[in-house]
Image (cartoon, rainbow, N blue to C red; front, side, top):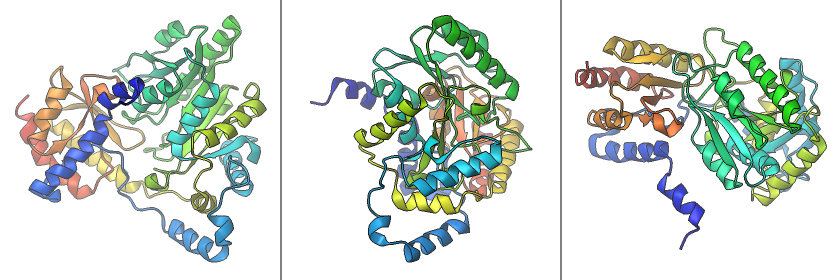
Length: 395
C-alpha cells in the first residue's frame, strides 16, 4: 500500500507528461509526421557546439576519478560557483561570490532544496496563476500550503491587489516565474517594483520574513528586445533558481543553481540548510560533469531564432483561424483561449486531428490551453491545416 499523500499525487499526475505519452502512442499508429505534439517543453534546438567541445575537453583534461566523484561540498565545485557568480555580476551588476551559489539538479531540484530549507508544516507559499503545476507538489512535499492568486486574463501580469490581501502571517515564500510558463509573459519592472513594495510592507506588518523565489529556466529565451528584471536588485529576501535546461538545451542533464545573496535574512544559515537539503533529499550534489561543462559555456545559449520563427508562425496561424491568444514575450509557449468553457473538451476535440495540447487547468487557469512550440518548424506549418479544421467546429 502506497503512502496516503502519494495517492493524491498519483491521481493528479501531470497532464503534460500524460499528453506526451499519448503522443508517442499516436505516433506509432499514424506515424510521427502525422502527429502534432505541443504538449511538452522539451527543446528541439540542439545544444550549442561549445557544449560538445567542452565535454570533449573536460574528458581529456580532467582526472576521471575526481571528475566523476562526489564534490567536496554538496553545494558543488568551488571554481564553478565562482565562475557563475562572476558571470552574474558582469551581466546584472550584482555582487555575488561563489559562496552565494548552490549547484542543483536542475531548477526543479533547486526549488525542492530551497523549499525544504525554508518551509515548516502549515507554512504558506503563494503562486500566481497560471503557474507550473508542480509548484503545488513541491510545496506539498514539505507539508506546506500553496495559495493561488487568480489569473489576470487581460495581460497575465500578477493580480497585485489580490496578492496583498492573501499574504498572511503564515506566508513564508512567494514563487514567481518570468518569462512565464505557460503564458510566455515577462513580468514588467513596474510589476516587480510593486510586488516588492507589498512584500516589504507585509514583512514589517507581521514581523516575519517572506522569501521571494524567482524560478528562471526561461530567462534567456526572450524576443523583440524584452528585458527580464533581475529580482535580487528589487527585494533583499530574493532567492533565484536557474536551470540550463532551456538556455543550453540540456533538459535531461539536470543542471542548474540557486542564488542565495548575502542580503537574504540569515543568509549563512539558509546556505547551510540548502547544502544539507541537497544531501538529504538524495541529490548529494549536482552532476559533476555537467557542472564543469556549464562553467565553460557561461556565455553560450541556444539559437532562439528557431523558436522565434515558430512563435510568429504559430501565433499568426492560430489568430488567422479565429483563436484568441496572447503573443508571448519569452519562453516557448503559446497560451490560447479555449472556444468553449471546458478546455478539456477542446483538448479532446483537438486530439481527433492528432493535435496534442495541454489544458489550462493544469496551470490553475481553466478556459485556456497551452501549446509548446519548441518543435520543428515543419510541425508548426503542417499542423495549421489541422487547426483550421478544428476551428470549423467552433467558429
